[in-house]
Image (tube, rainbow, N blue to C red; front, side, top):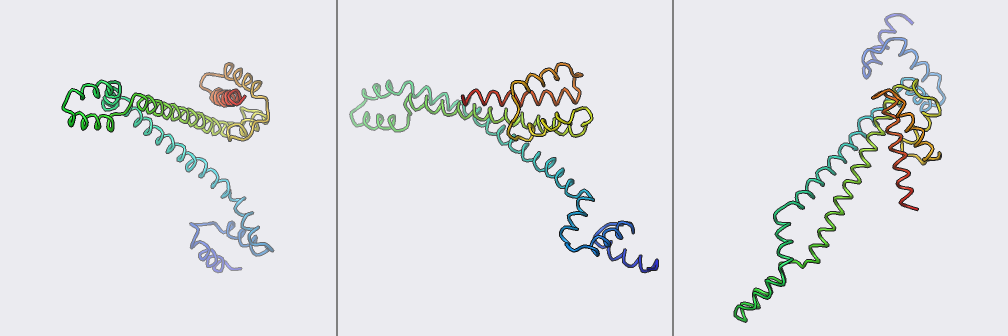
Length: 237
């Protein structure tokens, strides 16, 4: 094939790819030309180019991370609303009115029968009972507690996410068995090891690691995750 023919083919190929060198074009063309399964060849080329891994990195680093941060933002806003309700003057006023509801009804009876009937009816209809206030207050506090629990779990997930990233960037600082263990632990897979022993192990690793080192950060996340597993297990027993 002449030089001009090569240039012509390469120009046609580069319509969708920015400045691919001739050897890349030749490799792709040869792979497709000799293929008996086009889809398999495309997957092979993607593996070689690292497209699959790149797609995985983009999804994990940006999209999953984005969803995590968005959830935390929503929970923070919900907690702000709940806290505002709990400390709003209307909330305290309703509590005050509920505690004095019976007194208001009694005092309204000093009015004329017709007025007492109207006022008493309005009090009964629009002022909640103490039981209603206690129930609503309990419900609000339960929602607030639940939000804080979810925020704690998100914080742990975020710490695991960052620890996993650091571990993958410094694999030389971890043994193969540690990497396998932590990959399963941080990805939320079922635990097949003894959480008590592994909690003790990573607590020891945390204490003997250099302050703020990658290994100490990863150990702290692992210890927290095993502690969560132990806490969840104790609640179900």
